[in-house]
Image (cartoon, rainbow, N blue to C red; front, side, top):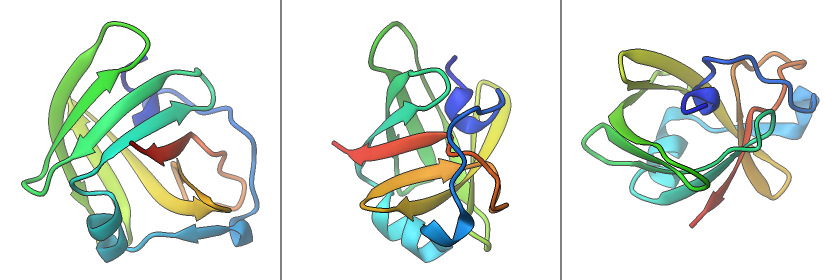
Length: 121
């Protein structure tokens, strides 16, 4: 369950049209997400977790409804794909604005389901 946010398990959340998504660029991700506490709600598992992406490229994770925490590293590719490596596994997500909320998905494909909805803590 720890890695469901990162795409190591297939998402089954609702499908949203690509035109409703405003994808974050690499610069947007670094400005908007890095250094802030985030709460992620996985739409397929219901897991709620806390994430902090630190400016030095490290990331901290904690399951908010049960045991489990970990740390790892993150990078953002030029196309805005953010990849997190934890416990020798890597998962990647595209981040976007979805209405007034932030969310992520495993691809920019129009049929790619939302994986998680994000709120700032």
